[in-house]
Length: 226
Image (cartoon, rainbow, N blue to C red; front, top):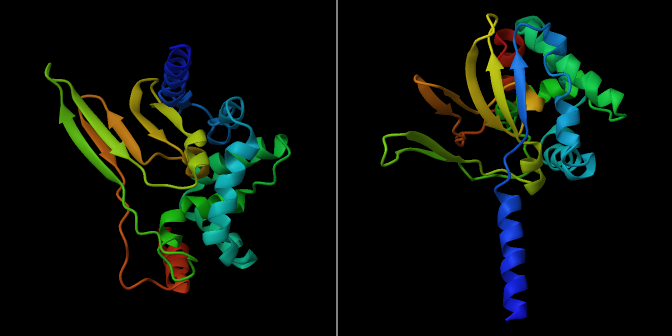
């Protein structure tokens, strides 16, 4: 019985940890773009050290994708963001400065590549085929409340340690939308968002057939910004 009691206590502890809500961060669009994400990197690292959060995520995605890019690719991606999305570029530069202040070599150009992760990950240079696809449903509870339920088939498991709950405030100080994502700090955006009383949206990863050439994707990014 003593063993059973300890087992139940340990199980309850694990469930509590699993159900712990991610940290909340408010993105205030009234702030200068390069300071909007100030404190967000530290918020993640206060929960999970670099070696258990950003580092394994970077290592896995470098191996499968980003190590296949050369310096000219990263330079072109940084220039594309600065040209087509100057406000986003300032946000990414601010995030890169937060990493630098912590002593981690995460550059603006590297974060620019993450901004285009989905486009680049559908190119012919990817080292492994990931056939998983995200899924989401919308459900109504007995009292009429609407919930969005979604999963993200993503590895490594450390990616979950990057998850933030984002509340976005518009230039008038009003709530704009809320989102939950693990690569928010790597792209200044969310793949799952809810605007109360309006809509709930999420990304949906799908395969590309035939796979596009990296040069063609880079040309589109440089010419169109996407």
